[in-house]
Length: 215
Image: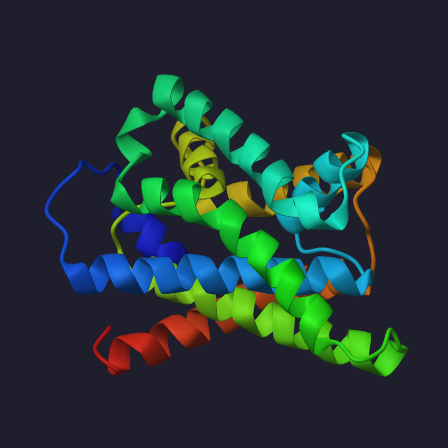
């Protein structure tokens, strides 16, 4: 995944195919549902999800309004990118911005329909499913290659400013997200640690698999 970001110093709006747009939307759908599943299990959030959860808790919103909270964050980051990193706003950024909140809310709804009980075993299973959906969604989003989400855009801007490798900037940024999300009220737990340890390798694996499949 890091090599993908290293190759791209900036992006411009260009032509995209219907296949790319559809695949990108599928990727965002999986990301949203995955983060929603993780959040609903209350076993901790991933690095981005903990910020969304923190904003939700801080704002006194319900679980069903997780998508709304995520929209607030993504709007703020997109506005920031417009001024300091406009070159990283591309079609994929807009698709993410438009679809993500709805997909997260849908994920919360689906969790309520699918989960028969609130037992620990069920919550662990859905945490794992949520992580896998998240990793696959990010891998699709990266492989399609028509833009980055607001969080990745901010990381790329910081990389350009600090002149450090992407992986180091991302690691530092993830730590900041976890701390800020926890202070706002986000759930820090075993899934947070699991995501920090497994996200990179799993996303890289899925990306390689998708490339072999011709995505």
